Length: 314
Image 1 (tube, helix red, strand yellow):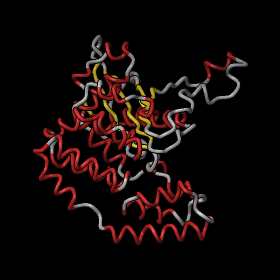
Image 2 (spheres, rainbow, N blue to C red):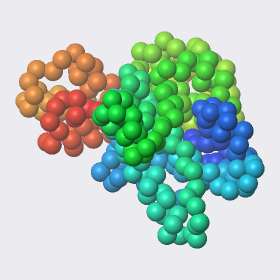
Image 3 (cartoon, rainbow, N blue to C red):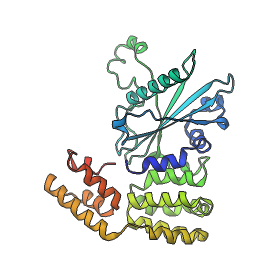
Image 4 (cartoon, rainbow, N blue to C red):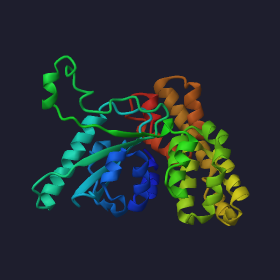
């Protein structure tokens, strides 16, 4: 998972920014029914501990315009490169935990509705089931079974299918747009670099972004895309947002020591080859562009992961 969750929570952990994401993806009937201007975040995480490396969650609530009763919006970001086929079942478990928590902490006569949204940024897009009924065998052949199976549906924000124009049209502040752009493209460095000029307007707007937020995003870029795209983007900021030049000098100074990285790359390549055999071009390319923290995490997974893909997958 790395820092995907940290970047997403930094961008959308506050209700005012989460509201912009929700306005972009919720069905119009739900948007019209709730007062998103009164959205608030609810503390807590409901993800299984053993799945925390794959999923990150945020819970919000907003009042209905007609009754004032709360409607909960559960946002889950999925970090795997491939979509989780069993996500509807997992989300059902998380929804049950939310209800159990509310029943424990509040006096309720009815369970409040919970709308689940999954944000996916894997390179291949979302191809997994979107509802619990899609997972249960036999419902089409025997429809009489359907009332006995929970009919949970997921809203999927599949970032890889969103064009630059789609992301840029969302009602988001510059840093929040940058977060979605980075989540979509940074793990595919060639796409990131070749598509950089389409984001020039956003880069200019980064002059108004808080320094600590921008530095965090740059560290994420450096870690997951490697030094080349990091340097290209850093220089683009200097060209288009010159007031950030001093900050970009600082960004260059926190770049990781290349000698340490070189040693980590060599160690990982050697151990992978010893355990799994000769490395293919894709694996060698991953090692060549990975930054030190990512290499260290891969080394930590090496002893227990069953495949090369499992060692490298975050």
